[in-house]
Structures are given as structure tokens and as C-alpha cells.
Length: 469
Ligand code: SF4
Image 1 (cartoon, protein in one colour):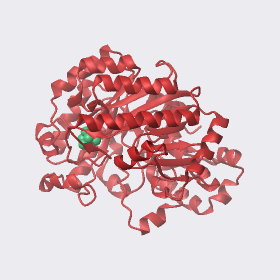
Image 2 (spheres, helix red, strand yellow; image 1 turned 180 degrees about the vertical axis):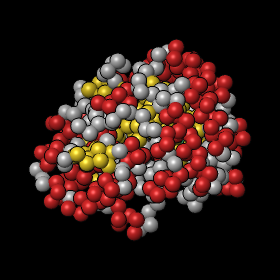
Image 3 (cartoon, helix red, strand yellow; image 1 turned 30 degrees about the vertical axis):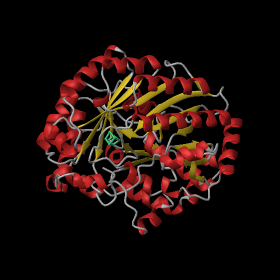
């Protein structure tokens, strides 16, 4: 077995020298191949063939719903969102979303069990209670959502758009997990990013979330924002620990104003320098681990009692476009503008333009934009990458049994990279099996990159990726 030894990654593992040595840019592998491989020659028929195979295979289903509207602009944002004050615009989108729900339900049938659903954005909770209820009702009417005890139903929440009552309504609808966008508690940082929300407001929501018995509460935090320092972030993390969320995502802010225009509104001179950023990451991660959080991987921490941490120890953690999940391998139906689906061996994405999305649905057409069908080689590489990401290691014999290959022969070139990772102390080898060391878990993306067939070409083309740490 190559499962987690112990669990928590020790504080001393996060040091600046280690980060400097291994912090390279690379994909986040919410999919393999990554979205860069999606192409517009992928046809509606390719998609329908995948749906037919999916219906024959009857894997469980997972649903992602994209609600793109936000009330105001957070200057750091790199999401696919639309800032609007128009209730009509929001309403109109909802009407088309419901058309897509009906379209997809007709394709997949209404009887296939859905074990997981996530609403993201944008700001899903920018919609009012009546519309949120209507949307849940329409999905529940057209798909077979398993009951809340068995299903994993989560929603992203902007704390500025919710109060205790609305949180109660969401629980009543069936959501059992919430993710709160916190980013930072420091008022000066909040002003600079144009996202002001008080600690008291969050404390009240946490109290309500506990009383409504949400199974898991996640906080999203960001490091690398203007005016952040080790001292200021340490204070934020102290407040976070006191509020005791079950999960924490600590994201790296990548400043790319040439790509995301609103980032140009941030006071550039106040961004922490690279060294300070590394020091912030070390300090914050150590603080979380000291407080008892387990490092799950790829920016994610969880309490040892949380299902994610437990699933990791048991080797049943999975990863999809919704991040880490305990949900078994499922076919994912993406609903809404820009949403990505994974159906059988096909990834596909809806159009990214709301106007086009609505116009296609108006004409009774599919809002499909692009996709990719996995080759046999993609499937093998994906299995290897997901094994490192979710199970902290790799058993070559398992890959050989599943795909009928001789692993050493098939991955002749990659074997030398694996040997290098063993030498660098990122992997331990036991017989033919590999296990990530605690340090290797911190830079697991780097190990996955060795198995990514398309990456060298993307690097050559100058594609930009976030850094692995
Ligand atoms: S609320 Fe979220 S999606 Fe909307 S602008 Fe802010 S960060 Fe972006």
C-alpha cells in the first residue's frame, strides 16, 4: 500500500529553499488532458455518442451548475463572471439554464442517480431565495438527486450576499456543504481588492452553518494580495483557525493584468515581493498544520475528521473539475455558460459567451463549444496522474492490469524522471511501487507533469500556468 503515512505534513517541510527549488509553473490537473486540448472540431455527434456510452455504462452522475453573475468586482478575480445590477439579466439567464437542464435530462434520462452537485460562479448566492429554490426544484424535477445523507451537495457563497436565514434555506433545499469566499480578514487588504466583509459577519455565518448542521464548511483564502505580509496573513489565519472551518483552500494569487484587466486596478506597488510571498506561504501552511489541519494537496487543507482527509487515508479520494472529492468516479454534466462536462471518455465545454449560450438554447440547439475525446494513451496517463494526486503514489502493476501494458516499457522515458524524484526525496520506492514522501506531496503537480504528453508543446508555445506551490 502506498497510502498516507501518518497524515499531517510536518511544519518544517515548508521552507523557502525547498519552495524555490521546486516551485515551477504547471497545470492543476482538474482534468487530463487539460482544457488546453479542447478543440472546436469536436462535434455534437461526438458528444451524443459519449452520452449513449454513458447511458449504457450507467456510472453515477455528478452535476456542476455555473451561475456567472456578481454584484461587484473583486479586482483580483480571474473567474468567468459578469458584474451586473440587472435582475432581468439574471432572470433571463436562469430561464435559459432551465432549458439546458431539460435538454440534458432528455439526453441522460431522469432515473440515473446523481450523487454530487456543485453550484459555482460568479456568485450563486447573488440570486434571491425564490430563484435558488426554483433552480433546485427544476434540477430535482429533471434529475434523480439522491437524498442529502448520501449525496454531496455544495455551493460557493459570497458572505456579502447571504444571511443566516438564506443559509437555512439552502440547507432546506438539500445543500450539505458550503464554501465561503473569505480571501483575507485584513481591512486594508479587503479595501485594496474591493471586497469588504467583516470578521463578525463570517463568525455569524459560521454559527448559523453549525446550527443548520452543514456537513462541511470550506474557507477560500488567497495569499499574494496587496498589503499582505507574513504578519498580516498570520493574523488572518489565527482568526480562521478560531472560526474552525472543516476545510481550507489557500490559493496563490497570480498577477496577470494583461490577461485579467481588473487586476490592473490593484495597487501593484503594494503586492508582496516574491520572497515575501514564499514566506507567507510557509508561515500560513505551518500555522494550519500546527493547528491540526492535514495537507490534502494542491492548496487544500482539512481537519483530520473531515471526509476529504479520511478519504485520502483510505485511498478513495478523487479529483474532478470541482476539486478534490469523496464522490466515486462519475460522469459529470456541466450546466451553464462555460461549464465543463466529462461524459464517458470525453471532456466538453459549453460556450463562454452568455449571449451565444442563450441564443443557441433559444434555437433548441446545444450550447456545446469544444471538447476532446481521450485516446487510449490519455486514459493511461490520466490514471497515473490521478493516482499520484488522489492516492499519493502509484502501483505500476495496477496500471498494467487495468490497461494491458508493460509499465516500464510503456513509460521508458518517464522512468528516469521517477528515478530522479526518488533521488530528490520526493518519492519513496518499495519494490515496484512509488509513494509520495511528505515533501513530494507538496509538489505532486511536478511529478504529474512528467507524465503529461502535451505539456512540452504548451511550454514551447509560452502558455502560462500557476505555480505548483
Ligand atoms: S465574487 Fe467571486 S466571481 Fe465574483 S468578482 Fe468576486 S471573486 Fe470574482
